[in-house]
Length: 410
Image 1 (cartoon, rainbow, N blue to C red):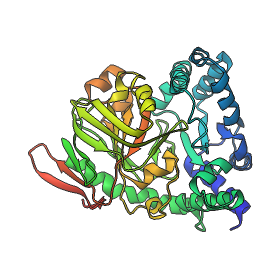
Image 2: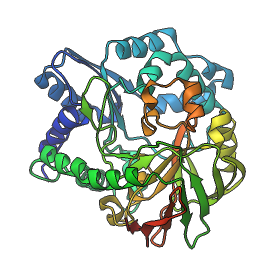
Image 3: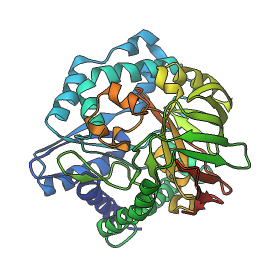
């Protein structure tokens, strides 16, 4: 493996396909300090494409851990004014935002979840302009990953550090198609592959989806009128075509927030801000999680569900075949960006306005009337299995097999 060559190909993919950078546009890049080589490669690719400027926000998760250890929970209720101004002003200037996800999955395992929750709430409030443009579809953004030593050792615990990092690089390159001769062309074909499934699902306009499998999931999820399925890249309001997540294998939509009934059982662990939640079960009635359990991470769930009213309701349904390229690697990444693309999943919290007709032009109240959930959080969790069955029910009662034995049937 020519690591440097692949990093450069990866960076070009992020700039050209991930955010569709325009000449004269500014870039805000958020990166762990350990991923500096990849971050600089992205910056170089951006300037080669004609970026006006690239600003890198370096993230030091070890410093974050020190703050969590020594600062009171109240400390995290405020965000520095300069940081809010930075993010909001760049969003107002229509900069594109790129984030490199490469955290240590275990680093925050002993941190009080309330501190993390306080910071999430404060950040959402302080970065109001940023989130407003994110919600209305006018912001171009992209999330990718690069290995860190701690993350690599978590994924490949039996290898030494250098070998683990090399293996994780190889897995990432494969997942995002950088191992191919022309990754940009591969992504053009990949994005086109979503079109058939999206068109079929949108034509059905299911009123409900019924999920069942052998580990205990048995749930009916209502779908809003005029809901929209999407997958692959998407268009910003200015016409820019971009890919928010790399990798991506999902076709997704928004459920009707008050019409979810039954039980879902997790099929993979969820790593939430460094806290592992495993073997968990949610019970829904009229859209609300009224009971839940977990073998690990129950206290973290308590804090998540205390975020706001919408954090105990669903905001996303996502369909991913069990035989997806990432699933076929048979690797647990402990990173939602990858693990969610190896399994059908749901998300608690906010729905994407784009998932209902004219949603990008709706106010919060209008979105709720249309059936979409609102929250300051959005957390994906995996429920897909090799025997998952999903039946779509149309308005006239017709049943359509959508998934069988974990894979597409429609």
